[in-house]
Image 1: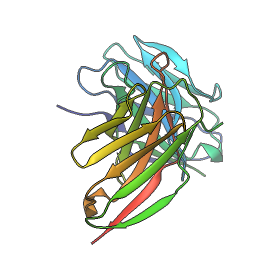
Image 2: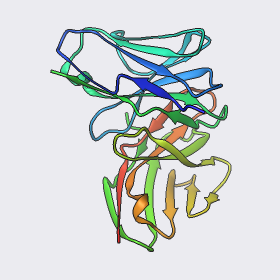
Image 3: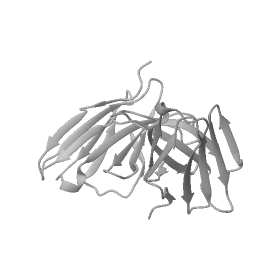
Image 4: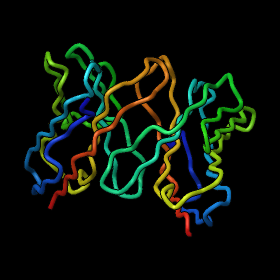
Length: 113
Length: 112
């Protein structure tokens, strides 16, 4: 049973570029959330997708957008990259409903130069 | 604003002793509190949780205590093992919402 998988694991971009990160949830899970973890910080909620729609969004600008596909996989897109977007981007799929338990992938490490 | 706070960035404990990791929160509406453990180059993994209607939850060597009046929870690890060395994140959740609110984490080092 594959867990949450993310790609790519590492990538380097320059300011102003755009990036797309990909996530496949744990088998049988239909809800995907994205989190940003900056250095020395805890993960910060970006948004959650369910039934191909964004259900809730954290305090992130519109440069951050996402998509969920019919097979429940998801993409996170970030436009007009800033140096401050350098972080570990974590994808999570939901475990037991209503408890907050999430299964996280290993993350995509984005470096913006 | 930071609704979940972990004020100790690091903790060092000898193998076999008790590790106590602390967490404070500001929002009394949280319904669940969770602890996640993170090793380098891996995503966080769920460790243990507690409902806001409980004051203690135990799972093997791990026990979480919740003090609602003080808006404080703690994770006890007894006995501590070198493999417990990791960053521990406290998180809180409202069952009417979708987001986990995380603290900044505490790096635990268990020395032989």
